[in-house]
Image 1 (cartoon, rainbow, N blue to C red):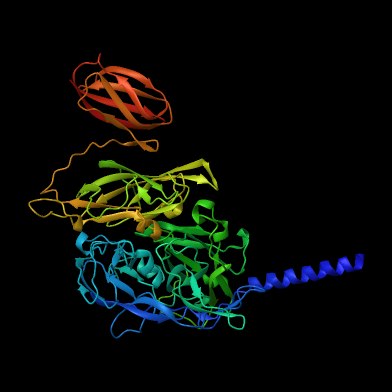
Image 2 (tube, rainbow, N blue to C red):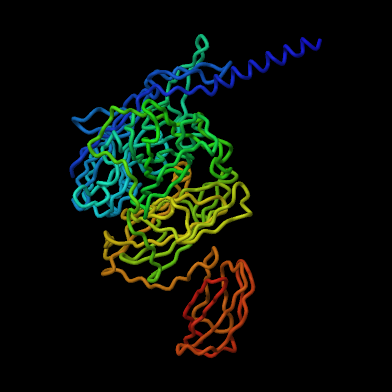
Length: 627
């Protein structure tokens, strides 16, 4: 009986080992598609319906005892195509845009439904932004024209159709933009820039597939899983390909990573191990974020990339031997809960593989890491206005919202004066991490509060210049952790609207800010703002400074007997009232509170006074009229 039990345990162990080996097998047998690069200042892009094979060399079965899925079939997709280029069946060409030139982009809608094309990360006029307002009806051409004033960076383009962004991006309507200054960029020569050889576009996405009935134990893929609430996408694609590999030269290679996924944050690293422990991750150097170069190459062993976010890394493949395989590791199972929601992660230990190849010798080879890149400073000395936004909703079937309001195309939520600097505070009151994206501007993070691991009650606060490396550069898309906070400063320069109808504001000339989880954007975590011409409009400064995570508002103003403070003051502080000559007329302690706090002011002198609140190294001032 003992022998029988021992044999049974051996059989079970053998089956478990077989299953483990079977499930862990992840062949990389599809060449990585490199989208063709389009150059110049005029581009004719056709948005088209196509068919695409996401795994032409066929994967292994999905697991022992499970059905085999036949991915070796083309399914319906959307794509962008340029006449005369290599035909795309998914995504679009990589456009190289020259700084300082006027761009002419013609978007032909060859679909059987309306669409838009948004230039994500680009500072341009609202009417050329390609947001939900710039709908391109079936069979028509949209012709945006604008001067490119941005810095060297990696941007991208994608559909932004109201309520249908998720579906159209999942189908493939997206592509990469390389904003370049080939003549004047001093860093070009010291960074890899031979496109497709040592400068690689890496567009990472999640995908779900619809399969047909089982025939002889095999299910055949019939379509992409596409809806405004697509659910988990268990497969990871790079440039529209599953199980992809790319041959790379034995030198530094630049990986332009874009998270083009509709929902998921990806956690990536590089390693020669298919299933690496943290100690087996090899170094990679961050050289650029959304808005361009960071101050210096930052060494990292892993990185979180949120939906819509871009990061550029250098990987030193000279440390490997010819023929070595290096994996782009999928570390998503180590993400905290608020990143992955209900334990939805993409499968597979790696996203793709790189194979070191000594025969590849690009003419612009880079074998040495630059010591410095671009000077970086943050200036908050001339802030014109402060704004405070709260991300909430999403529970019990309700919409995701900003400040409790859903998106309304007829409502302008914020008006901003051109050529002014603003500080925005984004507070996440949900349990889910939300990537906050704003159109038109690149911002600089000045404060970042995040929970530690899965415990949202314990937080760590980072302030400039003591920020994580990936926040030490210009950004347009930053994830705000569940229960966390992000504060940034931005200058809203160039391309104001002058309004219509004798100065009336036109929502058709608005920019968006929203969560870049696309189902959240569609339902309905998005608002809009306009940037106003200072010659036509007058706005006043003096909106209160956020204090310790919340706005600190004072009202009424003018006041008589009572003054109400609204906001959050988690630490003890001191209130001081001074006259316009700087003489102290009254002071009193302010104890921690949240919500509203009333102060009696009937005994204070009438006239114009200055209220100053100080606490924990922060300071707020507000002019008051007492009458």
